[in-house]
Length: 264
Image (tube, rainbow, N blue to C red; front, side):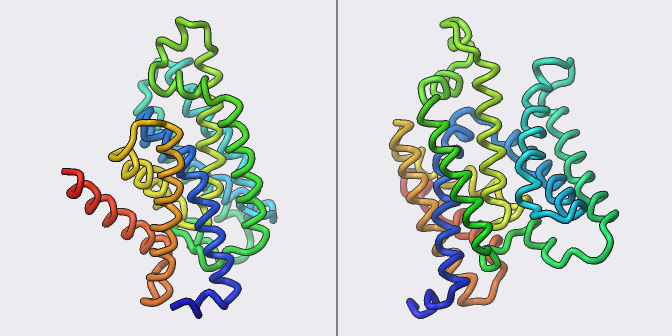
């Protein structure tokens, strides 16, 4: 079993599993607590527009997805604040528009996009050193931001109305939280793809929430759970020659079901 980690691509994949689990454990805890899973899904699909833009401009699609994802997050978060459109309607519109923009940019790009499938459904086995550096930097930004604004995020996540009463700029904090979701999306894109990444956002945190309500412990436990389950999915995908992203998601889902019945 251990000999498979002698290969460099498996070593990089395992490091990627750790890095994505950190982002999921930290930001995913807020996503589950604040119940913004569908909003996070919209951001993830809108990020595909950035991937398409990267192909069109001839730059790393992951790098192009960073500003595109953040702008999309701000747009989605601002729907309920500055328009009369209901939030779920706005989410549905921006979800579809982001994907459509990505498809159009790719269609306008000469030639063939050979690794496009990996951005849709993930391919952790194809992660390269550049991807790892990007993931590491984004993880550090996420951890630093959460540490600096931990009290504000806590207030907005549990009681946004109360945070307004005590004088917090709740809208700015909420937008900052969505920006962290956007950065986490970019971390996850190459591992499970924009179609499946919502599972990594929610399942480790959902499993961990069954065992603790302390936010700090929840983040740590969700990170550990994510590392273990993502690594198991990675190994199984290699052994049985299955799609890595889909296998990881199925392992996460199976673990959630088992945990639910154990707690039940």
